Amino acid sequence: MKRKIIASVLTFMMVAGTCTTAFAATEHYNDSSVTGEAEAWQAYQDNWETLSSDFTQVSITPGKDETELNFAWYSEKTDSEATPIVHFGTDEAALETFEGTTGDVDPSLTGDKEYVYNHVTVTGVEPSTTYYYTVEKNGEQTEAVEYTTQDFDSVKILYVGDPQIGASTGQPQGDAELTNESGAANTAAQNDGFGWDRTLDAALSENSDLNFVISAGDQVNKTGQPKEEEYAAYLSADALKTLPVATTIGNHDSLNPDYMYHFFNPNTTEYGTTEAGGDYYYSYGDGLFIVLNTNNYNVAEHKEAIDEAVNAYPDAAWRIVTIHQDIYGSGLDHSDTDGMILRTQLTPVFDEYDIDVVLQGHDHTYSRSKLLYGDGQTHGSYEFRLNEDGSDYDWDNAYNVDTDEQIPLYPEDGDEEGQAAKDAFTEDNQCYTIEDVEGNTVTDPQGILYMTANSASGSKYYELTATQQDYIAARSQNWLPSYSVIEMDADSFSITTYQLTDDNTVEQIDDTFTIEKTAGAAAEETGTTETTAETEATEATETAAETEATEATETAAETEATEATEAAADTEETAAETTETAAETTEAATEAAE
Image (tube, rainbow, N blue to C red; front, top):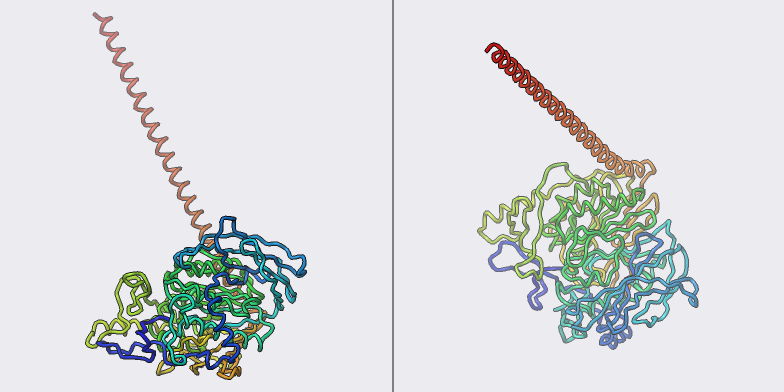
């Protein structure tokens, strides 16, 4: 993830003048030269020069629901018009044509070589069907790829965290050290791209019926910099030719528009935006999936995105949110500092909208929370801000949104005021209640399950906190790539987590956790949303009625006042006329007497 890694110092270190220890990546990582099958690793190395310069890899994401797929890819900009076209269908010899949109890629991100991005939506996708697809790059069709859909009623999802291609930079490999220089010289991206591909192959081998993948963010590593070779390695994984991925914007993805060039997300909103894009959502099977860009700290906007999603799909049996920062995690680097920065604000919002599960990343460790809900108290609101040159976030300080107070997360020795502010921040984040449940299968719980995924590529790992937090039910750090498998239907949501050993053995590392939902609870959940909408509508109607009544009363009063004024004026005018007549009569009588 983040943090200031100085040269190749990869173990934790004491920072001069501070009373706390600032941690960076550990010495552990997935060394593909060791864990990879020798022939496959050599072939990947031999092809790296070509792969690292091929920015035109295709990405597939879920569409707005299970009947749609979204495609995105680069093509070189030429004198002729771009051809954002996908050919898709069940008959390879007679594929249907789907046309989309195109736009210019910022050339500063591609070594000044000009590209356009292509975004296309394919519709009418059916369950349990074999399709074929090709895309057009400058009018030329790519080789056809076979794509098979799975059951839409019983859904299986691969959940991964932080592939972060390129994050192994500085680690030793053989007699050299991995680097993150541009292009083919980014040997860290080469190592991590192979590791990412290896993990996906293992997961797909064990679960051939996967519907799609959820990535909790940080697909790549170089924050705010050009990094197309990292995207090339990420997107080149064989499994991704046949698996859509719903990606999340991590802090390493957030500060460039290249993310939204490469991923054509469905139902995008104007909420929670950074340079990479904003919040989005989609429906799949019995689930509503809401993806928030929590690098934007405006929770009011995230609430609007959730509200829009819930109103678009009010009948979903499950409401699942993905965020990058783990507001309830257990990694040493983030969970007690920047990871929980939005905890006080998001917890009550998730409660209000009856979210069932929150999928997180960021901490490069694995953890599963107990079932949690808010404490019902009033808490402060916090955020991070960019550093002075805008190249990254200022990870050393949190800020109180309401008071503008700067809170040092690593106060220096003797800084009593800073330590007091940090302690108050920590205390304010004890904003949760732990639901009392037994076992690993629960029915109709009140609380929310928070999962944190470890790195799927093994590019970087962090330590766990010295003491396990009271809200954590299970956690692990075995310095191995891991992934989770979610199985979901109308009545049940279960999640099981695995790790991939150096000899390619898949091992389960935690008990399966299952949430069961009865029909009554699902109806009540939907009813809550409808009641909220009805209440708002009623309040709006009442307000409108009150306004109309007030306006009517004011109008009547104005009319009466106007009529009274006019009547008084008429009376005064009549009196004046009578006086004038009397005067004239007197004058005439006088003249007659004379």
